[in-house]
Image (cartoon, rainbow, N blue to C red; front, side):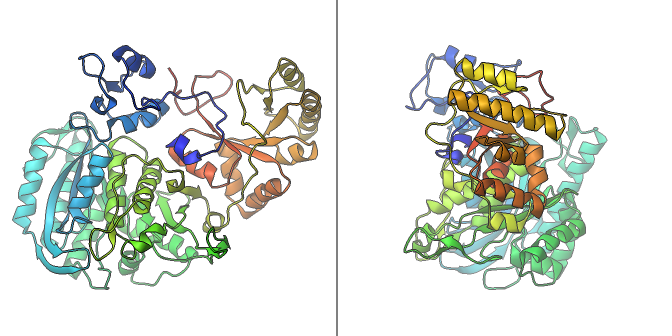
Length: 563
């Protein structure tokens, strides 16, 4: 996804070996193992029968989210026929007889993203792509029996909760979550067993719970009674890792209107506090918080405003995830059906694979956006989201911003002239080292000086730029944007901490826009999918991926991704 999301953006890093060859061919067992060997980890296994296609590669354990090769290896397990090694995800939701939403869409999502889906059906619906004709709620006994059966044999790593329908289902789900939580706490977070009536196969940890609170239908009708809503608030929401309401559901939970980006951000913060859950993703859906921006690609019209969601995780400041609106589905029945179901299940699947929450949300949004772009109507109504496997479309990748205004009007830096950085891209700490590197043939060099005063930095940049200009090389300056501009350097490189410091304030965003207006190129370091989304939000000239190898020159939190 890194490579696909960047599209034609140059990558200033050593290649990370992807398990799937460009030609889709086969590889020998030894080559496959050598490509993924590192620090004793064995992320994938290949059956012993000689050479086999990668569709038969199976994950032995959930990929550690901090290891880049594991992140990039995940597409190899998508679409396999065997469920061995797939993390288990439960969907507790209603059945959609039309197949576009509910547990049907959840199962398709799990399979598409390399998870094994199990279902707890809370309601049977008679519906098609046009509308719902009949709803029959499952009894509390039925929900309890299903939870018992699954807990005895198929314990989940993540749970998606959708439509619960009635108070009885809410109470049963709440009781199960309380039992799982208590068992995990009693065992100190390891090798506990689901308590009480659910005691059976060990639960290594309490599952990550993603709740998509289906409270209001598209016509405005309430889908959960007042008693059921009260039970949801008291027994389910406090045990959720993430709550994913849309605007209508957030308004129902808070009992007030939400019309602006500022109100949406405040609502997400308040929802998390009231619900007692770990995080809230408030989906913007069709909301247009900002006016259309710029000129559209077709007909010279203005582009529609981006689709924008706000994420509040714990006490961390809110962040905004935005992506271009998908217009292709307009011809497929007026939009897509089941986007909320698919998004919440995709997040649960990513959490089950071991990704951090923000990475899971970024990947899930890319999955849904790609599916909407590929959607095709199968009936007279809106099209179901297409399940296209691991996100691979550049336009599907969301961007992550610190404010709604920044998400709506991001800066855009010029691309690199000619070819991107090629060969060795040295990062050096003095003008003398830069001069020696360009004399030896380096074409792109980064000057990285830490802990020095502005006068010394300016002197070092001036000398390094003179050496690069004489050799026809390009100088990139780490962090010091204004000095880089004043001394005529080609570009500026920012790490994630420095990028966050700028994007946290309007003054910092103005400084980024000033750099862009001055024609300076920008490179940004990234280590995770969330950091990639944050980098893309400022329209960089290149993105650096890594670390590929361990380094002694600085403290790096992310583990080395290379062999």
